Image 1 (cartoon, rainbow, N blue to C red):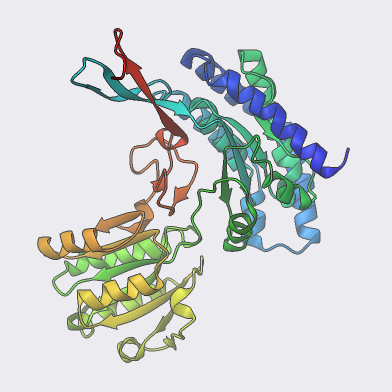
Image 2: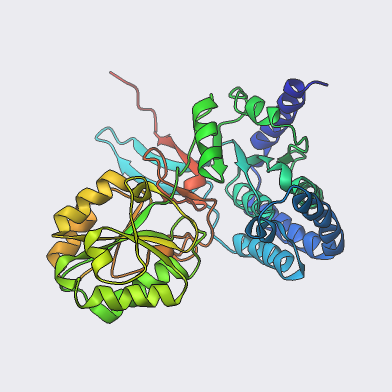
Amino acid sequence: MDIKQYVTEKAKKAKAASRQLANISTEIKNTALFKMAAGLEQEADRLINENKKDLAEAEKKGLSKAMIDRLTLNPDRIKAMADGLREVAALPDPVGEVIKMWRRPNGMQVGRMRVPIGLIGIIYESRPNVTADSAALCLKSGNAVLLRGGSEAVHSNAAIAEILNRAGREAGIPDGAVSFIENPDRACVMEMLKTNQYVDLIIPRGGEGLIRMVSENSTIPVIKHDKGVCHIYVDSDADLAMASDIVFNAKVQRPGTCNAMEAMLVHKDLAGSFLPAVLKRFQDARVEIRGDERTQKAGSGIKPATDRDWDMEYNELILNVKVVDSMEEAMEHIAAHGSQHSEAIVTKDYARAMRFTREVDASAVFVNASTRLNDGFEFGLGAEIGISTTRIHARGPMGLEELTSTKFIVLGNGQIRK
């Protein structure tokens, strides 16, 4: 069959599975997740062998060491995937929860109940663990999932998806609830984005280019984050030791993540005290500093920041630094260059902290804490399928509740409209 027919048949089967899955008990879903976890561990050798095929192709294509590391499966990473499935099984099931109920003057009761979204399409790059994570979260929230991973991990992803689907069927999950598009042809993505008759939501996970392409071409609603240009503003009365630890963690702990700090804004009163020491701390950790004129005067070996730099998500050890005259200037800079992902202020002033949380537009705003904490697990959601910077339906880390919609339920005893 041609690509259009191939993708359409996958989506159609998954949609049919989603209707059955919506009414399956929590016990069956949890049993399936445990079976899936056991299946991954039992077939670890097979997964590693399939992964070696992807790694060989990656080396032929000259992919970076960082990309190859993200692609690599080993016993520890397979165990982590399995543990993640078990962790999702331990989370409360949101499906069927009545989140609010009120009584009308005629005695009728009106409420809202959480229900699955339906069929969720996930388009992603690089990491094979996304296959297991996405399947687990969608399954527990009552949604079927149509997965399309990057061609660089096609063998690994196909093997993981096959194990998950087989284990799910054995536990009573409908066939097709975890569906994977094995064909690596990029045309499959474009066809997937047109299956609005079957797919209810698209979630892209990957680089800026992928997310832009999906947003521009999808006929299906998209929840996404464009990029993570995250800032930390160090206020004039900040606890300097705390500030140094927070900004260092936000940049250095894991620079390749979307919630890593890309720009540090420092109040002018700290340009002679705090700034030189923290710049040296960064440089000792091999962070390249790009700064404005006042930042360049505070240290050595600092490159001048260009207009383009302020909008960059580096995902590596490069940091933009700017000295600002006030919190207002810092907020104006964030409004002009931020990506509404994660923003933070370090300050002892409660009033300024609260103003910053009200006025700064982001999926998460932090006071005296690292932007690296914008994460479903760190927020107590248990797990996440991604961080949304869109404003409709879900914003910030998307856990199980964010993978549901709601419907009104009405309980009456004969009421009619007059």
